[in-house]
Amino acid sequence: MVFRLLLFVAVFIMIEDYAYQAVRAAVKVKWVATAYEIVSILTFIYIVWQMAQFDRSVGQTKTTLFTLGLLLLWFVPKLVLTIVLLGEDLVSFVTTIFRGFSKPSGTELQEYIPGRRRFVSQIGLGLAAIPFLSLIYGMVKGKYDYHVMRQRVYFDDLPDAFDGFTITQISDVHSGSFDNPEKIQYAIDLINAQQSDMILFTGDIVNTHATEMHPWIETFNKMHTPAFGKHAVLGNHDYGEYIQWKSLKEKEENFKGIKDVYRQIGFNLMLNENRYIKKGNDKIALVGVENWGYKFKKAGDLKKASEGLAPDDFKILMSHDPSHWDMEVKDYHLPYHLTLSGHTHGFQFGIEIPGVVKWSPAQYFYKQWAGLYEHLGRYIYVNRGFGYHAYPGRVGIRPEITVIELKKRGDMA
Image (tube, rainbow, N blue to C red; front, side):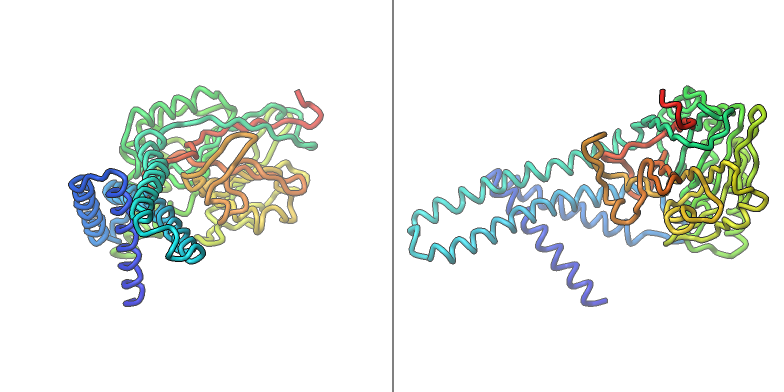
């Protein structure tokens, strides 16, 4: 513990020192550098103080969201500066060794080194401005920059009546993080505008407490109920696992309240069960499991949820965590044609340019982290999330409303 504390202090001092050097070298005005240092230290003190006040019986609040966002704004740009200046120091050290101390002359060094330091500092500040401005954008606008993602999925054995059937999927609402009613209403209107045949919600309606959703029930009740209904499953946050409860009874009451919230906004909550969706003379099976995650709560029971289903039934599974598909569903003896998941949020940070690049830290933790994936004719779609959690924003990974269209293979129009 002492070693970790000392390591933390050493890293803090190094990063702060390099950042101060960069500001002072770039602007050449001492009072500006001093003012920067005062603001930086006061900001750090505030962050540490807020972290010390964190109450594990309450969990995440809007204050903790803001604090984490401020921490990233404080740390990430300085880390960029540190890497740039540390790299310049290493280059200077190696250059000095190879060139020797006699060339260039002392006078030339006195003129050359400060000039180079200033130039490198300016480059570093320019690079640091990119994550700084991006993080601010993500907190101010990115978190509510809703985007409709459309995906057609083709199947050989899709029942004829369901050719062209549309599903709107939302996931990871995290209502306890919301702070803008107009933006949430806009998102609900966007969902309604899709006029899909069915709406599926793949979990995490709150961060922890059922009461987080109460101010938003009226808004979410404006979401239309399509002809084939609104159905949902639970996500890992819906179990209230991430805080210290005063008693088991309190935790159980909260869990009951969360399940009832789904009812209050008109969703049929599926808890390790299935039902048939019928259209004309055809039917498909909709299956919903409780949360099952490789690193999170394993309440999902695919065997129980599959009871009564036939191997040749066309099956759609809702399972919050995509690791469930990777570890059990894709090779399950009963074929699940399409699995819908969420959970990853795409880490709320990344770079996506369709057809060019798709990157996020999420890919180092989940094999399937955003969009459509296939394995031997079985598919999973991972929704990037409706809300946000921890970091109060989104950079490069927009909040998503997914519209999936089921198509019979052979009809490629």
